Amino acid sequence: MATVNPIAADACDIFDQIKPTRSTWDGHWQEIAERVWPRKSDNFFGAPGANVQHGAKKTKQMYDATAALGLERFAAAMESMLTPRSSQWHRLLPTDRSLMKHRRAVLWYEELNRVLFQYRYSPRANYASQAHENYMGLGAFGTSALFIDEAVSRRGFRYRAIELGETYFIMNHEGFIDTVYREMPMSAYEMSTKWPAEMLPQKVIKALNSNKPLEQFTVLHVIRPRDNYQPDRIGKEGMPWQSLYIFLDDKELISEGGYYTFPMPVSRYVTGVRETYGRSPAMLALPAIMTINEQKKTVLKQGHRVVDPVLLGHDDGVIDTFDLTPGTMNAGAMTKDGKRLVDVLPTGNIAVGKDMMDQEREVINDAFLVTLFQILTDNPRMTATEVLERAQEKGALLSPTMGRQQSEMLGPQIEREVDIAIRQGLIGEPPPEVIEAGAEYDVEYDSPLSRAQKAEEAAGLFRYMDFATVYAQSTGDQSPFDHIDIDEVSPEMMTINAVPEKWKREGKAVETLRKVRAEQQQIQQAIEAAPAAAGVMKAAQ
Image 1 (cartoon, rainbow, N blue to C red):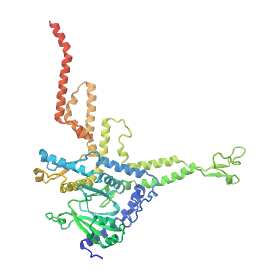
Image 2 (image 1 turned 180 degrees about the vertical axis):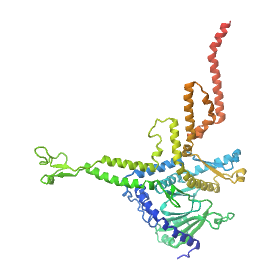
Image 3 (image 1 turned 90 degrees about the horizontal axis):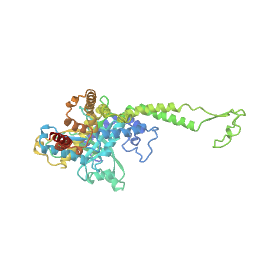
């Protein structure tokens, strides 16, 4: 057995303390997974990966798919509102706004923002699929973690949504997760592709030499603040985050490294009092999910009885020889006066069961925000003002949820990406004025949610326009429109309504267009006035 490294022993001791504290959550997550996200079930008990049966059916506890479909829609809605892959959903601006006067500085921040989107959505980075997986985890379990690291064989980023069943968290005094323990299964072959042979534990080398490359082992990955952090040092001591890979079987340290920025941001949907792990929409709707599953079983049984009913017969009847084949004549099943000797057992009212299930479906869809995103479904002929007011209402209702994702997930994610981009040289050297300001930046989110939150301004404008129009029509006085500066309003309205930048005209182009239009109007007026002028001149002769 290898000598136990004191750093590894310390990390393992802490892991042994925090692992039991998650046991209550494991049962809760398993119950939800079986009914809401079946492919994640059997992942919260025992050693990671021990209960995974590849290709096994996992829907035996799920009779109704409302919650599972609601979860898919929740994840799609979160992605479309927060991180739509079809648009640039954030901008980077200098913290020192005086830098906005320096063209070189503005161009550098714009280029940095472009680089982030280019490498983030590179097909090999795998961001889109992993972000969607994270939103699914957020809706089902209330907690999700995304690992962001440098690409191994190329420049750029790589992303991986981390299995909740493998991860354990520690929260700091500010309420943020700053320590992650990830207990992950790895085959001997996987370990040989990650570390050189001289770093592999003896048990792994033995498995490889015995032609057992798929033999499974458990590796503990620890990410935590470094105790002996020295900012001026080169190497791992100069990295504020410590990274340890420990061979858990023997508590043997495989490697020690670090990160300049936290590589695994953890987001929670909502949290309870002093709870480290988050709570989810599925947890809120779990009573309705359990109820509708039982209702569905009952309705299925009752429906079976309706379609293939239970028969009641007189004890002297023909029930022993009764034939249910279509078109068959059963002699003796009716008296001469038309009274039936065989009848059907009453089955109850299935419509009532359907109504009860619909009520539970409404609760589940509300929990997963499905109904909130159906702005135009109820009334597709709404006016522009009504649409904006509904969008503003949606933005207000989603603001707390989305705000938490921006602070816990997207902010740290962007910070990590910027660090990697600068260290890999994906962006050119910043200009002197940016370096002097410390290259500090602020993130301005420009997602559909951000625009929905600004919709109140646009809705207010339309309400005023409605008032001005009614007033002008009734009095003939157009002066209310004089208070609207259309040159200020138009760019803001285009931004709120997500008009692409390349579709917009610049200020000079607008001025040129107006000048041409004014000249054309003068020519047209001259043409229209020409006959009258000619008549006046003729009369004067």
